[in-house]
Length: 210
Length: 210
DNA sequence: GATTCGATATACAGGTTGTATAGTGAATAT
DNA sequence: ATATTCACTATACAACCTGTATATCGAATC
Image 1 (cartoon, rainbow over the protein chains, first blue to last red):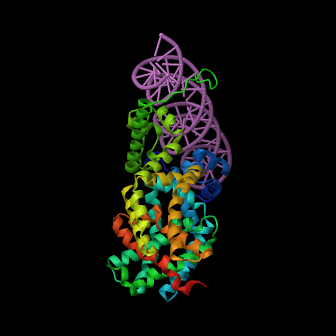
Image 2 (image 1 turned 90 degrees about the horizontal axis):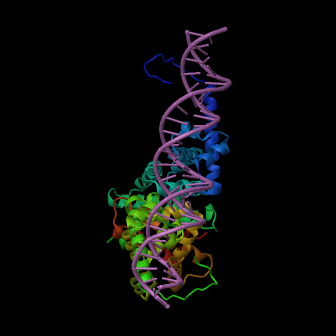
């Protein structure tokens, strides 16, 4: 029982939630393995719990719901992704050079974590999870916005167009489509770079501007 | 009973399978409405059958499985899409002009049938359904291949690169991402056209060719 | 009038998410 | 030492889902 106002002793845990964090990490690992090897459909809470050596109810204790588990798995992958190198790339003075490095980093990232496919698929099926993941993707959009602004593209529709195009081209869906079953991350990056660069530098070509 | 080799009279139906085709069409309509209004997760066989006023088993009679229903729904949308205008666009002499028309047609198509989102999401979750849908999408890839060849891009890796890029840029995923919640089909097309045109005509710029 | 066949009614097996309740045992407090 | 907290377990249940099996109805077809 946990009656809020009655005889509650304040607890400062230590070993306790250390162990809890460890089982949480084990669950996330198990979930990502299943996602990578068997796709999003196969990720049941039961299978995840069994793979981590705990009960299904423990998953609910840790993540609240299936969507909670998927969000946490995405976050785990994102944090594992190299934020340091991203910041370093953004520090490149020339915006076009910075964009090239950023695109490369995202290609490497998508390439290294193909288990994300299952999460994105689940997000496409479920509106709630979709919104949660979209919010996390906004950080990428913000990053690209900074580069667009630094390049000096006028605010307004032109800016939104450039950002949305870059956002789409650096998405997981685009990467997966271009990857097919032949290319590696570097090849996809080579394919993507000229297009992205043109979007950022392309103000000199008003042919299609209408 | 239906003992194959025993006392089977050959039947040539008429009104019978006319009625069957009508319930089949009603089922497909119901499925597409559900997909459009509630997403791929909500499409259960029970809900589809109820919306069409039949039993769940009738869905199995008609489509064999859930994947069968989704494939049939996709085919129904595809056939409903204007093949005539596509052929007409392909008949445009100049490859770049033809591509512009083709891109526009696909933008209109994706825009008009946003219920496809649920089908593509389900395909991303299920490998079998994914393969079935990918095969159907190859017709679009073939179309783009014809335009690339007509433009005279050398066979080999350059051709494959151009086709894959155009295929990705004209995909439903790209369209949806660019559409966001602001743009209409024409706006997305305006965004896409310069990129697609550059891919087709872009042999003159070997800057990134390495 | 007999046969075929699309559709129905009903039931079952096995899977899923999510919730509820009671209990265990180690970490933590007094 | 004793009491309390809390992550985890065990078990059960409700409500969905897909897929399959069997018996039946009734209109279209022979």
